[in-house]
Length: 334
Image (cartoon, rainbow, N blue to C red; front, side, top):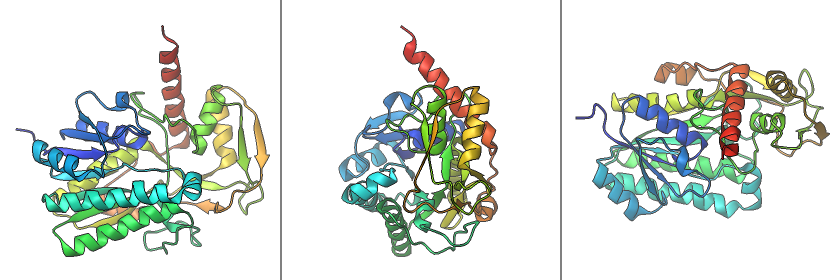
């Protein structure tokens, strides 16, 4: 008999989800992955996981998976994540993030699945005025992406008050890196995260990059962000489920490293580690970019016993470079 009961991971073929699949399998959990492959990749899912192609917002499919596999916990990653796209197409985000989550939560409650781990975001804070940002900071998102995630947090809060449901909502800061063994990594069609953009530029996969604003009130004039390794992030989800399994209470937790790096520092580190220079041009500030965004993570460390193992910027960039080099080499193999 398995030590742990099977878990359902929605969006498990995506960047963060595929790393979480590895983490849960390595922790001893049987894993069922549900992904519609709209942005995920089937070959990113570890071979020992059960894979089902489908929509996390399909109550009949989710009900069948819960019954067939004896699911007692859901880890919910499925959704849309590109901030500018959310501004251009807000209803897509309220459908894919908020509406799908509502149906999934309702289905879980109907079938007695009372442990839920939710992939949230620091975007719920909007433009914080106090740094580092703690979980009790005002939640005033400035784009539909952040709002769609915050609405799901509200639904979880209210559902937990009315039903037998406990959850952990994990608010990510800037996710970076790739699996240290290069088994999976970032594969978005269009790179939007800084380390990913710079890494692709260093490897010749992009024709250079832009820095948006160099007149912020920071030491070098560029924005400062807190980067967290995707494998550390995945491990936090395993610890969050164990917290609930051991009787722990519902929690909302930040995930970051409590240290910020500027855009220039990231670009220079990518160039140094890759041994390659690439074109970097300056562009105007983007609307809604705070000068500095760094997480306060004491609550996650105390609640989960979580300690990031790959916190260094160089480690995160080196892992991303290794993943892209391995993937590029594989694509070139006849």
